[in-house]
Amino acid sequence: MAIVVVLIFFDVSFPLELAPSYEARVPDPAVEAEYERCYRERDQAMHEVAFGTIDNPDVQKEFISTNRERIARECRELVPERFITVQEPARINLVDMKPRFW
Image (cartoon, rainbow, N blue to C red):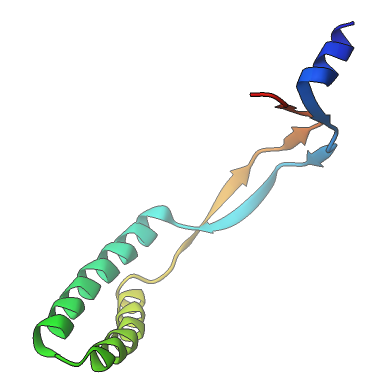
């Protein structure tokens, strides 16, 4: 009886996902946060120059797009990418249950 009630009120699937633990190389979050801060500050300064000195919207767009590439390259030179190794836990997923009516 309980199985019938579960099948009525829940959408049940059996994905049978088994994944062992493994080591993964990921970008260091502290370094990436520093890179994002550098990029954000320089991008803000570049926008202030673009909108404060250039009147033509097409020229502003071109100025911004070319300088974004330069800013990203300069910030990456100042804050080089560094990877860390993290241990990903094993994953076991045998049954998924999703409510049907709520």
